[in-house]
Image 1 (cartoon, helix red, strand yellow):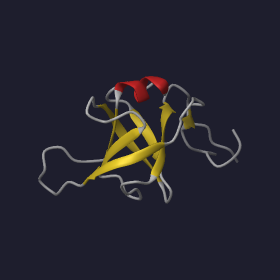
Image 2 (spheres, one colour):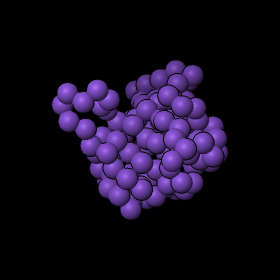
Image 3 (cartoon, helix red, strand yellow):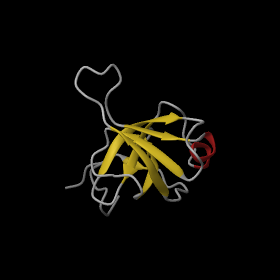
Length: 109
């Protein structure tokens, strides 16, 4: 594998249209549910061949991060709500991609 993902997990080459960040949730220490999470409607998750609870990669304008996917019927199609994901803000455009965990990591000299 060549290119920017060299030495990292393999990214699935699936259709991933851009999504608008509709909301951002920030948690505090002691909150029962914490950590990076991405919420999509069932239609957007299906387009990307993703299931509730899967690890996904959210690619924002400033950085990329791994998060847990949650299918949420309250999120409108074409939008995403994120929790505890650094580098994204409401109204920005992001992409959510499936991480191919079935492929072994490859390292190059």
